[in-house]
Length: 104
Image (spheres, rainbow, N blue to C red):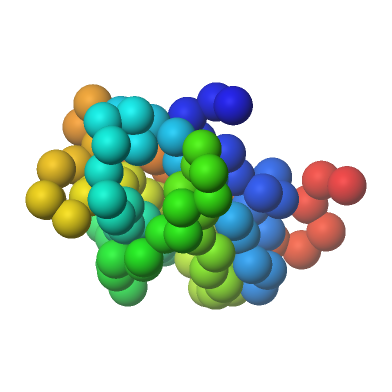
């Protein structure tokens, strides 16, 4: 499995998204991983940022959340219970939120 998996893809406004993680923190034996997620209207300013407890499903940590309709980007990174971060080398992960019909 790749280190990050987003389902469904593309991320659609008003739907639930599932994030799977098997990156550095998971491979380092973290006891708990958190999805640190936020949303952006325009630019890079995160709003509604929060930590979501991820579930450990054998080889992948997973979390689900609802994507509100009023935002343009879904941003996230990960941290563990020891406050170690995996933030994509300082870039975080950012996905454009599709509004309306989008891709089928």
